[in-house]
Length: 177
Image (cartoon, rainbow, N blue to C red; front, side):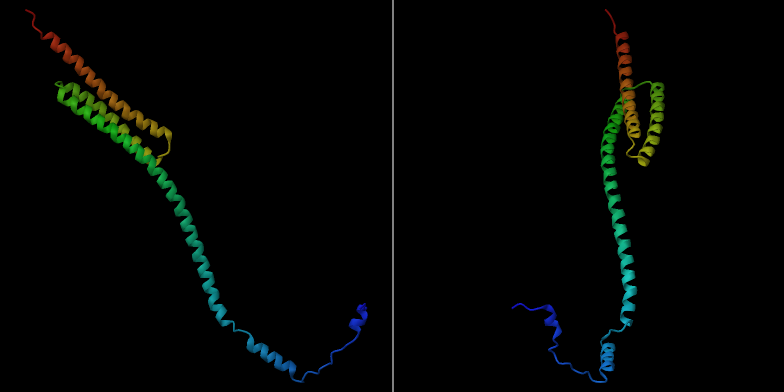
């Protein structure tokens, strides 16, 4: 069973066949018939380019719109909390002011405090504009809160001042028998 590799390849057991004379020409003709035409690929080439450009534009749009949605929801949560806080303070300020107007008899005192509240309201409007531009700025939020607290404190001080005046007037009008 031992065979030498040289002996195996040295023998040519297959008979040689001769090819027909026009074999080369027939082969080239069949080869030409089997190849597809390039006209179809040229038309699809432009479609491939257009679709890839459209795909890139769509991906970019969705990526950019996705990040802005996240930022918008974060802004709206802060703004919603601030609006609730602001609404609560403004309601308390209006309630205290209306009760002051009902009790107050001195028009000079009312006008003086009304001017102070208008000044505070103008400052408040400026702060609101800054808050809309920079909703995440902590300094703007603090100044907005301090303004609202100051306005409410001013009205409470007015109420206390009126109570003191009212107590002095009632104590002077007492008649001793």
